[in-house]
Length: 166
Ligand code: S3P
Image (cartoon, rainbow, N blue to C red):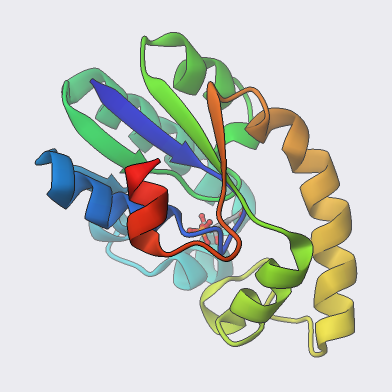
């Protein structure tokens, strides 16, 4: 079975996916890490050197590659993965189990403010108020895609173990 985790930046897709893979003994793939390895650059470098459009093309190509090659796996997608082109149809149409890790805006602001530098889309937002404003609008647009997942698991005030258990 393929289990695909989607959700906004900072929702814990990689953090939860790693432990879930260990618990059920499945291979784990983090799409961002996969892209970085294959491209030989960090996500920030790819955005800087080649631009977001290039990143989105690669993201789609590697998503297709992973889902067509691996049978059993846990895949942590990037926050934007389900929101571009036909990616969400692919994610939700191949008999995979899709889970949206849903986190409140307040919690995302707290988690992301200290980790902005790794994330090209938000690194320019210098205050928590600006970050919150950005996330509010962005999440509103993206929720349409995230909500097409088969399951929604809220993550606020839950340990990683609790989320994996669910
Ligand atoms: C992005 C999320 C990032 C990464 C890239 C773009 C997005 O992944 O793919 O910076 O569009 O939300 P995480 O969700 O793992 O931060």
